[in-house]
Image 1 (cartoon, rainbow, N blue to C red):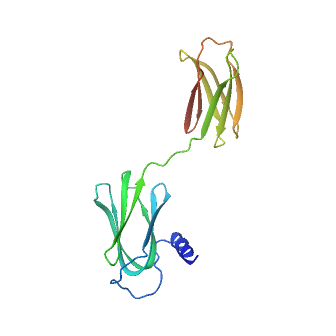
Image 2: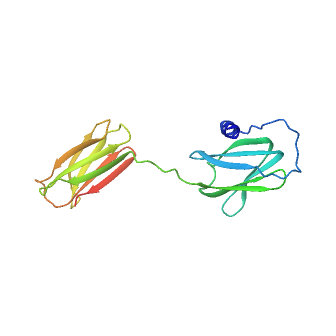
Image 3: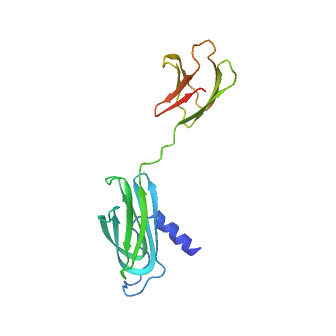
Length: 198
């Protein structure tokens, strides 16, 4: 439980050293712990915990093994430090921690574009043979959704804006329109979903 509390405390601070023991560099470390967590889209936090005290070198290397950043930190039992990757290209990086006794601990991270959650998801179901369709829209924000329907020759045959703060369902009767296939485009400020009838 004490170790869990210490690690939690490490995660709450940035470059904070622990303890007040004299610096020693001759002991072998068997308890060193290193973790790297992604805090935000462009920030990673390195957490280091060890009983050995002394200067720790933190190197960040690119996929070719070239050091793109290096920092010396005086560790008195451990530290936590944030690193901003915003000026680095996307790719695989390695955090290398060189301990006071020369041991090297490594953790790889993948710095990539954040996964965007679409603001809308949709499903289109044919409910009869005479071109009736049920549109179901799952929304993740309160923005209105513009519904545009095109026929098989890409002519716009219907357009409307549904200003609903929540997810919705709506029936469309396209029986009086020419064509056997239709495309529904659902649009909001940051997303477009296209569905084609079968």
